[in-house]
Image 1 (cartoon, one colour):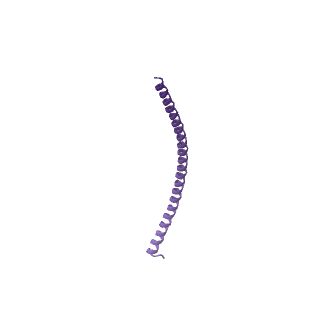
Image 2: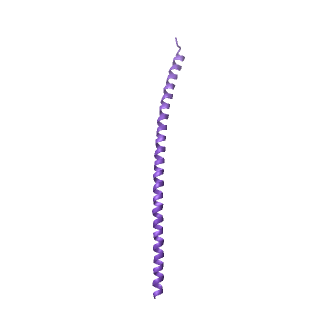
Image 3: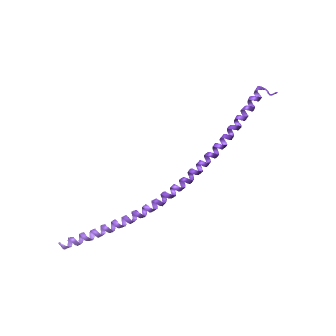
Length: 84
């Protein structure tokens, strides 16, 4: 015969083993989520890096065009000033 203490301890062991199993499952789920989030983060960073590069190129073209227009405008102003 088992004593009440032994029965209590056996029941407690079973409960703790079940909790361990649940924690292992939860850990696997969390690790899967973390991996998924990391993959998504890498994808987003890659997309943003590509977009940033494109925007820098567009900005450089715009700045170059603006400088050309300013230079052309300055030349025209000089020519107009010399005529008078």
